[in-house]
Length: 610
Image (cartoon, rainbow, N blue to C red):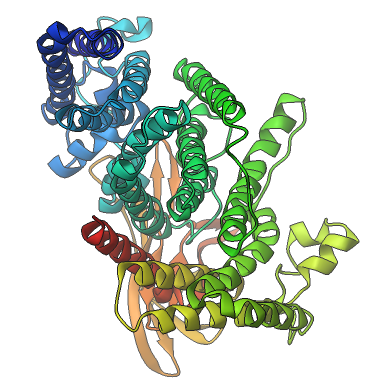
């Protein structure tokens, strides 16, 4: 298969270029430079052709290729056929490798010596791509050998979204951009020259695309797919870890600590990729287990061992001095560790022969006090050292308000939840503390940012966006109202009450889409105090890969009405009924606004940083 030849040719060319560069840098073999440059360019050309070939196979409906058959079909629009290229792990690894190889060309053009540390990363990604077999033929499977394949399985209905088409490439740009800071960090801790300032823009670029890919675009996709705004899905949690660690690294002024944080961030990226592909975690992103997992595990272990060795080698340099900045960075790392532990506990239990799951309640309860502490420290950092005492006062006020709970709705955790009911007395006491405790830290941090925004700057917008995301995210998830309503089939045109709203079922029909799936659609109109707030259509799709219920969303200035329809519900001896589930999320527009401000802010920082 030409694709496999291109992949092997590209990996071979990059390996030769790596060896040649090592000889040039260690032995001064300048006579090898032309051959090194030619090998590097040849590797990139092979890789680019392999990627373009895969795109062509999707566009031409070549279902003799297993990966094309798995994620494409003749009826799919061209846009989604292109998006299907990176819908599975084969395509995402190829995309990740190609984007990472761009950093090699950039470093080579600048004659940077840290390119020596980037080569192993790109070669490793090449190895993962080859293992995933993106060009494997259907005929290589014994049960389909000799059988004509006229159409493909196509994308799952939940993946047929423009947001999902953008989410993987943007996220993998974030992954790939982190390769250069990682290489510079290893180079620095090996005692070589300091190239960390050179890579700052790469780290900022990675942070930008993490914020866009995971926070904004990925968030909108999962929201519209019917799962909610932040469910602590394993993939979401895994992607939050590198974002937190990279945030800490970008704030660190000490180069030894920054280098350490950049390396940990890169390791956590490999860990996030492993989460998505291993099948050990229940995730909407999960793929089946493959031999690629073992290679990823080996990469994580090897990189971690190298990191530990580098830290031990430089142990005398890491003289931590307590300061507000260091404390804030420590809190970010601690939150990242909490998220990691929530992901690791179920796996450890599974390995030991037990079953355990960690839900959103664990993450929300354990991270909440540290998020408040982080907001207070943000305020102190923005105001300056003179704000240490006011920050302490804010902390005391927060503790006092934690014991003032107007109703159960203000509890950190819903007392009616299963997690609360099964918790210990101590956990119940903590979970019963009041969400009013968030008001002083949020107001303090917000005031500090506004005080610093006498002149609009990228840094101020980033911090303002972070405050809006954290505060509105807590409010939207904690104060969301949930309702259920049932219509009989003959109730079409009738109106029923749902909390503070009136819901009218204006239309219901069942149809078969081009994929052959049966789709149930209900059109509803929502009224509040006699006025129309909008209408939406909710669907229930029966697909061969599963059943899907994308959300219908009515957006208001101060809230979202989030409707889902789980399909006709059959009842004994009576006609089936149409159940509707609704959640009302307050202040959700502020959450999205915060994500946008984060992104705009870091773009301004990248442009203005020299």
